Amino acid sequence: MVVFPAQRLRRLRRTETIRRLVQETKVEVRDLVYPLFVKEGMGITEEIPSMPGIFRFSPDRLPAEVEEIAGLNIPAVILFGIPEHKDETASMACHPEGIIQQAIRTIKKSVPELLVVSDVCLCEYTSHGHCGVISNGDVDNDKTLSFLAKTALSHAEAGADIVAPSDMMDGRVKIIRETLDRASYQNIPILAYSAKYASAFYGPFRDAAESSPRFGDRRSYQMDPPNVREALREVEEDINEGADMVMVKPALPYLDVISRVRAAFNHPLAAYNVSGEYAMVKAAARQGWLDEQRAITEILTAIKRAGADIIITYHAKDFARWSELMQGTI
Ligand code: PBG
Image (tube, rainbow, N blue to C red):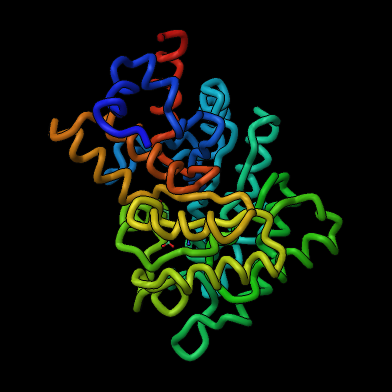
């Protein structure tokens, strides 16, 4: 057995070059997915107050934005829509001329190689702000399923590369898979938001997407933060229903969940570094309370080290810019 002084763990930390050589985890730009908020209208590029550096774009403003994203070698975007019209049954969620359907077509036309992931949920389209349709004051699981399936199908028809249901209804992956297959979209993968927690960290997103529930909260369908074994059951359910990839969300407060899912399943695993996690870093950095680049690099590395293959993050563009600057340095 080699012990001190023959063994000295500090030897491999002596210089930056040695440290890089033995680095176990490396976040790469190709691991990242950048979220985009798309709003109905013309000529809109408006910054989201609680998410500095993140904007709502109208479809006509998308080509320039996605060219920049692709130019930074970010492989994928995930889309969220802000419609003009909301109603009880989210009818604009699955409309062929809905905001997401327009956005998908626009993006695929301007940068065809950029992967478009579409978030499949009703909360941005319902007048009450819940992720499904309401019966007797609660979100009705089974009634919601057909609306979700129609929405996912309309995204595939518009040209989405991957559909990502984020509603947390039981059975949604199964019905979406069946619906896509019946319409000959058997090659469109499903990225399931499997372990999605009822989290305080979605606050800024709900401002951004105007999707706060008008009554109650999401705790009857999103997961309870204390539970991790239940997360494994959620992931198992989605995999059994046909999910191609699974997700844990949020990321930072749930690194243990990411790690447990990684150990228990072999499917590609995504983690969503959500709006509140982004807002905290931005706010502290603006005050000069932490070094933004180092903090973000550390956060993304931790998410990957925990076991995520794919990281959805609002920091993607900044990280990609820094990676470009770092290239070639030893
Ligand atoms: C839609 C959805 C939400 C997020 C992604 N998809 C909000 C929610 O469930 O309330 C949150 C993303 C973020 O906070 O960055 N259901």
